[in-house]
Amino acid sequence: MLKLLIKQFKAIADESKAAFPGTNFKEWRLVVQEIVRFARVHSPSPDARPLRYCALFDSHPSSRPYVTRFHAKKVLKFRDALLTSYHKNEVKFAELTLDTFRMLQCLEWEPSGSFYQRSPVEPRENGAVTDQSITSGLIDINLAAEMMDPALPPNPKKAVLYRPSVPLLISVVATMCEELPPESVVLLYISASGNTVQSTSSQTESSSNSRKSSKNSGLSRHENYINTNGDTSQYFENCLSVGPSRSGGLNNLYPGDLIPFTRRPLFLIIDSDKSDAFKVLHGAERGEKSALFLSPLRPSFKNPGTDVTQTGSQFTLFLTAPIQAFCQLVGLVSSDKDLDCSDEADGIISTAFAEWEVILCTSTSLDLVWAQVLSDPFLRRLILRFIFCRAVLGLFCLQEHGDEYLPVCLPKLPDTFSPNSETVQPAIRRLAKLLKVGDCFRFSHS
Image (cartoon, rainbow, N blue to C red; front, side, top):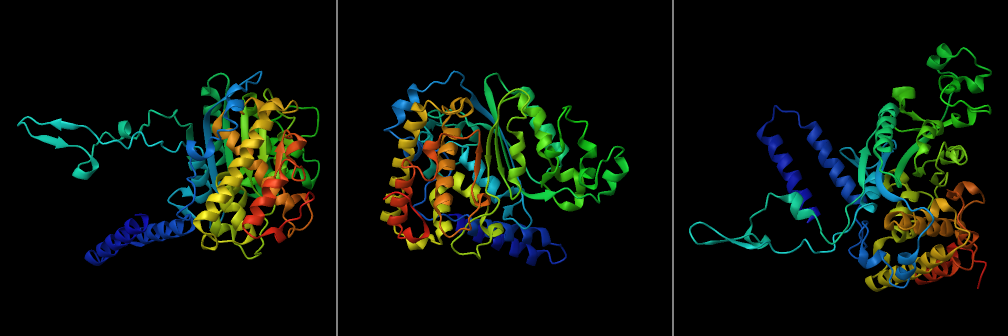
């Protein structure tokens, strides 16, 4: 259906250009190109799972009793999320990038099917009946009511920003935190390229009255933001460019910019080659300890020529479509595995996640930061997928040795979930054996 719609849309654009030769259709051609490119990249195999949370796949029967009974001293509800990504030449459609789209879908409920019911047959004034079913060709304009699935909870509210200025991004986060109900958590997902502050910034030099060294010249306009007795330079040494560099400092997001919002519970996902700069937030919170997922500084691929700008971020893909990310890592494409193999791979992951859920719910060493969000299905699934991602990348033997290829979570999860643990390795080994890529990994347990 998607391919058919794209073909029809392209035909309409071509017909319009022919009918109105004096009109500039450059923007419409760009729209068509973006749609085609987006659909080509985001074209999962026919047997792929939905990105959205599906009770059939993501709710594991064997661990459900443990999740149901689990209750931390403090439980936070996932209410709001802010999603933004910007990379030069990244795949996007209009103002929706591929990374943001994947994360957006990951934080939605997959309809259970209850709203796919035939609308009732209604009598008309002349005694005839009007069939409001889909086969009649009539469309009920009350789409909002039709799309609400009463069998599911409401989806978290999400703000999607494309190339925002940092003042705009901060104002949206501030509004979310101000309006956040008690005992709730905000998720911030930021995917962007990193940037190191340059000491040649004329704006910084002109506004700096107490510059101690050229290294700190990019920090002067931020020094008054955090009133501490210690060195605050670590909060403003590196930043993320959430928009084009030509906008200068307006698009530079520093770790220190987020510190004021740590008065409320935050779940931060930073996907960047400078994600390690945000480690400084751990321990610098102003009220509530934040949960941090920080991406590897470099992606890992069996085929070095893989272009992340054409396929989206590897870390985000692991958090939203773990099996697809695994196959991309080892150089497999969807045509390399049949339906039976895919079902078996899903089974391996599902069994492992169910086991890990039980361990998380019964662990005595689980930090309260993770325990207080574990009851939420979306955040719990992200935690499980992070464990899977870190284990796969940690065992991937073709990478260079170094922590820059591994994601980081703060506070730390129990050692039970380290890549070399007997809890995690068996599932990765079974998956690698099934897909015949065991030579890509190094396993310490037989």
